[in-house]
Image (cartoon, one colour):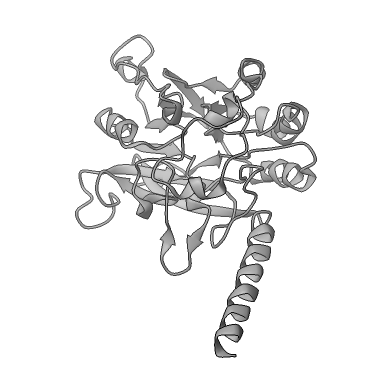
Length: 310
């Protein structure tokens, strides 16, 4: 009887946890983070970080929630990829991002911008490297059209390239990479014509942007003197243990940095021992694969980063 009751209780707890994880996957939240990184005396600079929407047709609530973020009036939008997860998601994605495309923005692509997710054992996500050939050939998504839509609206493509953006009277130099999860990353050389720091105009902030925060990319960003690196991809672990945190990051980043504001390669620059680090922000993202539509102890999120004077 005791064994039976124990098994019954475990089954009920498991069913409850599963039901909650489905609900939590749609419980969107806005994180607000302050980063003391601007030159002395400057006013705050608001940056909206969007990542990993994994949008599919019919996700009306997510579309409306993302659109409403425009009321935050950010100076700049940074999109770190994995925008969609379905061949027919372009109309919904453009509707969700429409008010944001009217603002200055930069973007890179993630693996699920190139190919649609495919059915696989959800437990594979818990492996150190969830990549691998599946039984179904991946479907290529119209990513070239997506890039054309974004750039036509004025957003800057930072896939393996550098650029500069001027917002709110500030000059931001930019460096980005294509998706490291698909080994498409090629870090652009410094000091060329596209490196804003070589010009005569003072640069207020040097910003790194990537989808998947693999260590090789973060090391390159740090060596390039990026003040802040912004990334997504991890889903914050997606399934976390309360009071412990993420179990995986789906890349070689340590689980302590699965989401939120951190330092790289050491502690945060404002913490003891962090003097040699740069800032790193990793978003837990807003979506999931349609084949694993759950989150536990890791709410889907967008982030308003407030860059302030150090």
